[in-house]
View 1 (spheres, helix red, strand yellow):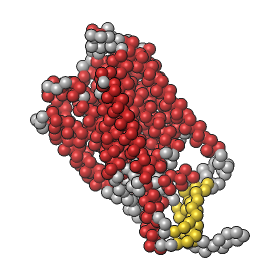
View 2 (cartoon, one colour):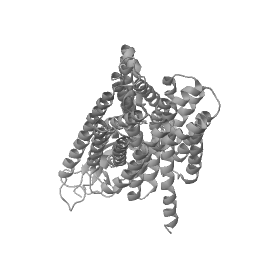
View 3 (cartoon, helix red, strand yellow):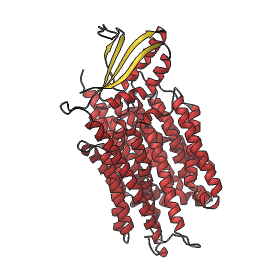
View 4 (cartoon, rainbow, N blue to C red):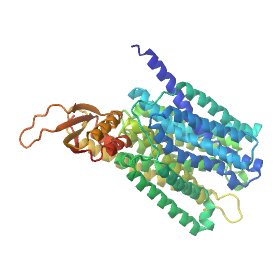
Length: 570
């Protein structure tokens, strides 16, 4: 059979994945440059207009893990198309001459598209050769960040010359094109996948995230009603804790929390949370500083469109870093790349703190930020997916993007609080020193991020150092199952039907199952199953995956067996 059609399909699939990820990120960010236009067009306060951005981030944060779980199942293509259809309908609501409440509904529908980024990664991992999928996943991660830099100036330009509806019309147009692109190019998920959505868990998570993002966006609540803010913060923590407990107990978790607890995944998510806070903090500082009028004693008084152009170095250098990172990762381990990227972003903070007297210095700081963010975003998926089964790609990355969304919201809130504290009574704009203080907070955040990444790198180095030298190869992992008794053959058959695809999706290779056993010494001739994985970590992650946990739940007490995960020599 010729491989030409397959290669042609792969060539078409990669740009389709990139385009869809770019579109959903750009459309969700449309609220940023249009907040003032919304306030004047609909005659609402700026705080209310701000919700055109906040509600998109909120719906995206809630939809991401749900779509990630649906994307891990057999109906991934239908999930992608249905989600893009929702985004298209949301775009129509933002364009039609409807009341402000309907605009918010439309923006919430557009924000749902943010959950597609992790699904694009899952498609790439399933349908592209391994070496191509890694580079594609890295770029998908990057364009999901720089999409804001693409959408911001275009939306601002259209709003300036064509009005608010014209700017939102751009979002409707590109999402309609994305829907057609997905219809023509998205393949079906591999056979043998299963996925169930924990509806109760999704509702609890939605409540917790709603409170977190609300508290991050309503900064005045902390200064005027501290007791209410603290009460809501405690409620958010309790809801998220209840969600975590629920996910650990349910047979169909929304997010595979057991896999998330893996040191590599947990460390990467901590770095994403703190690093995302710092990255978004600097992005908002620079754009706000650029738009501050000269009458404040600093700033450049740029229009919304001109301030959007300041994001061009961020987008361009971010994309360049995303292209370079997969090649660099062949020589440098992923966690070290995260640490280096955090250091670069920290350098952007230092540059902004010490040199912002002219626009060229501001553009330089934005470029440094873009390169650091691009490198960080491109390296992050590799760190997580190295210990994640292929079937759980969408779920694992969706959780990482929820962490990123919360981190972004926290970064925006911290920037607002620091600048508000530096604003004298009766004045509209903060003192110039307040920007320096906020930049130093960002330096501290990136230092924490770099430290967490280095700790993760040291852990991986210690793990590799403990592996015997067998010609430079990584030690494989093995499942060894010895069946003592089989009490219910029907349960075992049902288990085998689910476990086979789950193990295969996780990269397992069946070496022996129920063949002849010759026992010596204290050994017992039992039915034995031997499965090989590329690494011990993959073997551990495979057992913790949601798909295999579903198989285990089916098996229940049907057998008594001795199950072990062991590390090989090569």
